[in-house]
Length: 99
Figure 1 (tube, rainbow, N blue to C red):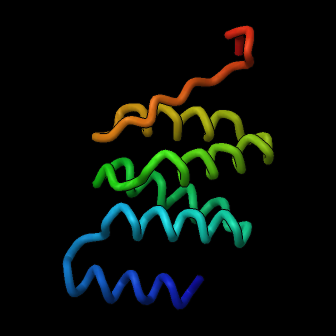
Figure 2 (cartoon, rainbow, N blue to C red):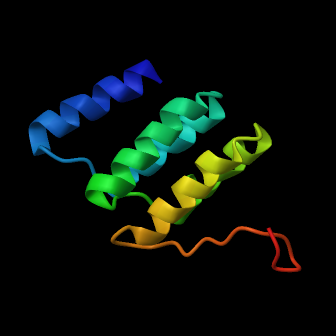
């Protein structure tokens, strides 16, 4: 992952921005490597400042947070995703609609 991060930094320096594909790829990579905190940080940056994260990577981070019993953090990420420029419309709760 460190090589991927270096590449992204180089691309940002050249273009002065990071696109959706880059954020999505990095977030999924961090999740696959078990680096959930870094993936969460990337989601927060991508959603909070740029609106540059699709639903798939956000779902992967939310799933990872829930598996680690980090429910409040998962809820905050869902709220941020739903407020982003490109909301993904997540909901929490079981099939009966209760939390």
